[in-house]
Length: 279
Picture 1: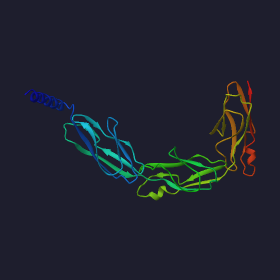
Picture 2: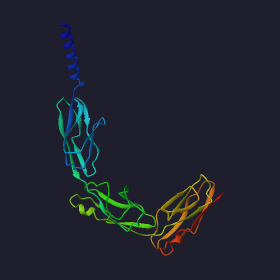
Picture 3: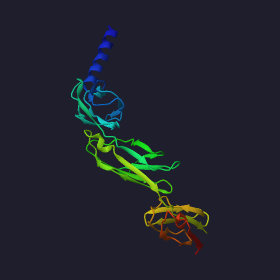
Picture 4: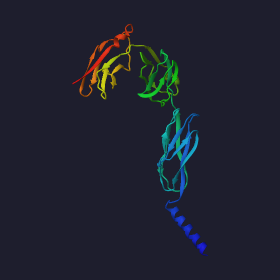
């Protein structure tokens, strides 16, 4: 009799807790459509628990029967872009909800051809000012981050190769997954250019000086010796080297800092002298 009574008390307690949502859990979820074979979609709930999804089909998260839920996209796949609807609400019972819809639409790869790059050098490309890839050989390339359908892309050179200047043709447009060819004709062409540099002397140990060429190519030096700016100049372009920031307690002056870059006389732009003296 005592055992039966205890069982009744325990059952009553569980029912009471279930009535207030203490121990009763159910699920909230839905369906994913549009993933490709190389897509990885990460969904997360209000507690930052995640679900990694690689194929179309159903998904679900555990939620208290009277709890508030918020399901969102934690990480978008690269090949597609996914949109989630009906992702938030409040449970009113222990019946599972399956009305969250995740629909994925193909993204657009941006690709093209690199030509003229000298062997042993490299050029870095960005899209919309975000670094994408460093290329070390001529030929076709595909940027690793695809573009959402309907969004714009703008491919630029973020780091030039030594003694060359690379330019981009057909580098911008609007991604259209019904016309993939439009984003696959980016052309990056590299031609010979003149390096700009020289020698720094007199800089005290532990100090630094900041130089600039034409006001937009900056170079920070912390030791004496030879230096070269990151960007070379096309034949016939002018250069003007100046000191942007002086080292503490010193003054640095530039000699032979201005002129015209010439492929026939590349050494002319490499004999800039920067000398620092104590104040």
